[in-house]
Length: 190
Ligand SMILES: [Zn+2]
Image (cartoon, helix red, strand yellow):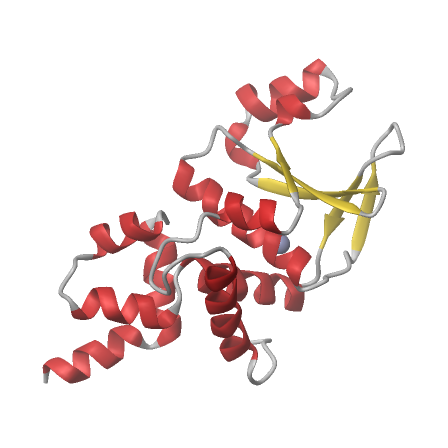
């Protein structure tokens, strides 16, 4: 069962449109989350950019176990900062970044906060509703419904549409299912 409140998906579609307009992009264009982050004054770092990160932690994050994490949002003195795993494929990074940006845009307050040993950094953990909202907004920002419908109606295959939006095939498939675009196209073909 969805935990999303009524009208939330529509709100996300409008946000996806609004941000494209703000960034001077066409309605059906790819949205680069890095561009959006910079527009929102959100900094994006890689583990190497973190000052004072112990070498052992850096090695753990980038070499030993790079698949164990994708991105985290950190609040330093009221400013949001996303640390992204730059060992991930670009499409996966886009998804991680859009997800973290969504938490920030939605003003989510972390359910749990971890303070780093130096006491300067706060790592956040969100509750389930917030996770579902962030997933919904990030998927919509990357792949708006009408843009998806438009490209698929033109007969473009999934690989090409995923490449257009610079998302993974999983994200594309999730959007095709969630938006009902898949069903809509199947009905049209009948
Ligand atoms: Zn999250």
